[in-house]
Length: 490
Image (cartoon, rainbow, N blue to C red; front, side, top):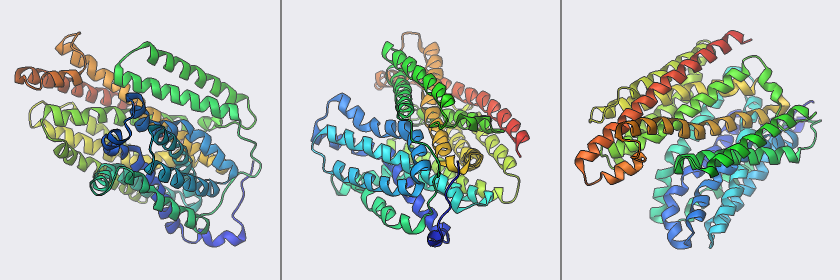
């Protein structure tokens, strides 16, 4: 399998790699904003559209489900039809779906358009990451570009609530969807001029059965994890998990049998790749799981308002955005493996801070320090880890590799919510009593009872400290895995 080179007539498109990077980063920022901005508009949307509880849940969740469920398939499609072409097509689809959603008159229209936007977003991200390697062929430049790309993505995640709030204050709820139209139109117009094309010349057709198995497996597993987080263990969650894992096993078996698989599992056999994938999965698990505790700790234990809690979390967001550029900068001056090890050690120190949290006011410092160190650590390491996997894949499968990594990251976050949420719940119930329910119930019931609130706060904080200890144990495994990977590096 070989890949096409840009034709002579397209050479100008590779002469402005920085402009091309800006063009790739703009849609990524928008995709990040769309992941969480809808939560700001949901109350007004619910009042206007009057969705059922199930419809409201799907309106909020379907975007993330489709991003995670279709990313592997869309990454493989980009490798086959051309990554620039896929970005152009999906930018048009994203803009059209956004415009339709803005003027929706029924809940099903929002659900359908959010699903379409999720598929388009799932296509744009891996294609963009794969093209970064073409725009910046030098490994150090690639990591720096990947860091800048991730900084834009994180900026979108951090700015989403503020942007949504400002737009809702001035206009109606549909304005949060219209935000995507001009950005995607700019991408649609400039991508053919600024981006190089790259695709596999002799790639086979997409195996539709593999695509269906991949989508069904990931959706069922993520749905099961969400059910476990929201409602605890139930037969529905167990059935969804069993079905998802079963279909995943069939998917893996099929990829091994196909001459041209949707996901080339041989990538995992390349030196160090499997270890890096585990590092990415485990760090995503920890970051996703601990984020569950932050808002409860600041608002319910410390008694802060939502705005004050958001301000206390702002340093961690800034730290991650800065670190995603600082790490690659350091990689120009020392061995990349050393930068990653230092970054992972910084992340470990963050979880050590969580183990010292108390229910008193002084605990805020421990929690904020922990979140800053943890997010800065993963922010600095992530561009190297991502590039480590993508650069080891053949160029004709770089998009598929990028989507594989992103999917592992999404599943890691969802798994972390369940695993660390369960750890915190077990400790909470051990102190409050087996029939005490969740800490959400505890804080609600203790709202007018200071003595009970103190007990609930202390029990929750004990669970948070245990989550910090769990994070230390997992990070010890992560450090060993990466140290072993560093020894196998070329």
